[in-house]
Amino acid sequence: MKIQLLSFAALKDYFPSKQELVLDGIHTVSDLKLYLRNLNPEATNLLKISRISINQTIAKDSDSLIEGSVIAILPPSSGG
Amino acid sequence: METNTQHKHITENKLELPTSFPPLPSMGGYVLFAGIVRDINDGRQVTHLEYEAYSEMANQMIADIISDTFKKWDLQFAECIHRLGKLNLGEVAVIVNTGGVHRDEAYKANRYIIDRVKHEVPIWKKEYYVDGSSEWSQGCLDDTHNH
Image 1: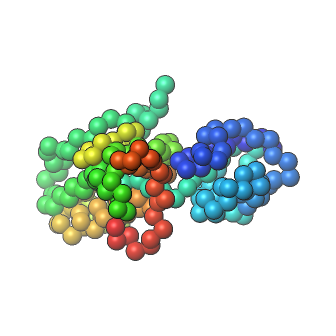
Image 2: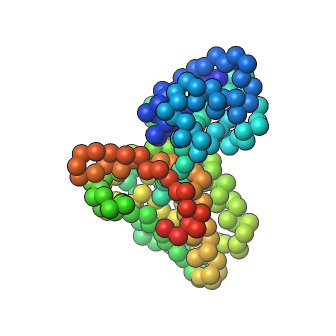
């Protein structure tokens, strides 16, 4: 499955702000989080408290990834 | 081309305070909230900030929050706009303005909007300090919203 992955704010210290990933055997948001933790263990704590969006909709851990979707990792908001 | 300027609720332009009220004859109470860049956070002296957002998503989420606000209170007016990019001390980062027949709904709706924007909308702040260092704000892990 091919997706586009966006990283924001502090996550950019660990992952590119924008990258294309070809994922094998990764079907859910939960799988993706584990994959990213393995890719960069130093990002584990931040990944734990970050939300994931699929095509700009906040996703649950159990949600399925969608072929060709834009997936974003969103650290806790700090606007305002 | 930078797309942020296409968004109603997100801008890279300097925010100006409104100089007149929306022309709504039944509006008897109007509340304006401005979030301002201050010079200190957690005891560290701040020189300036930078805001970043997932702009398309942030714009839609603010629109949805405003829509929810109109469902909760009988409002005449509600608007919110957040600035991105480099902001100096004293500059306005976010404006929320609400208007109702009476003050009560205008106050409550205004607080509701800014609290949800701060906690839910994908906007992030990087703080720059006098010692030359910088750090992304960790965001709110405090559910009381009293900050």
